[in-house]
Length: 110
Length: 114
Image 1 (cartoon, each protein chain N blue to C red):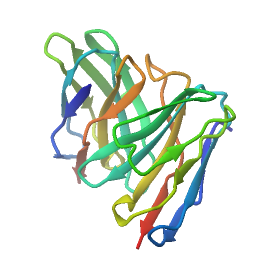
Image 2 (image 1 turned 180 degrees about the horizontal axis):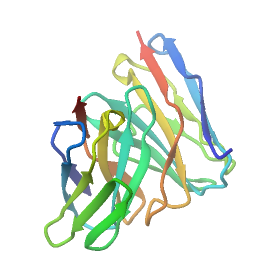
Image 3 (image 1 turned 90 degrees about the vertical axis):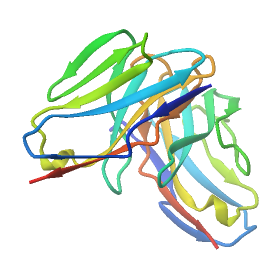
């Protein structure tokens, strides 16, 4: 099976950079994804890493180190609208069962 | 418009009264899932389906049933709801659980069992 751990809360100011970490334990690795969820909304896909390294999508980047079972989501030039919960996630159980971390609530202050 | 729809959006019911939450997607996705979301626990997968007539248990399947008779529909059935099933439920679909295939989520169903 797979379990993922994330910090429960992170706070930063507008314009800053914030990093949300995710560590995982898994019997098989099939890639790490990140999702964003605003209060009252549904999760939406942000990024995916299958290999080690950094994937960049605009202000958001995601990093993976398979040897360390560790990844992070990097948000740059923070905006108030980035206040949301962020989840790392990935498939397990021969790639069929999908598991989410507990989520990190990001608060962006003016 | 590509979307996942769920109904109802809100439901208040009593213990033991059978209910069904419907889920439908229009993207011809093979993979569909049901999740429940509770504070501090993230999203936990209840059941998933790799394709028509192929379903399997996720991490928290007790008290739930599903069926996949058509590719587009994946209803969640609570035969005898209990208060501990009060939660926010999401249906999701994707081409595959692996790779960079994003999961598309429905708007959610908030269920209260009294």
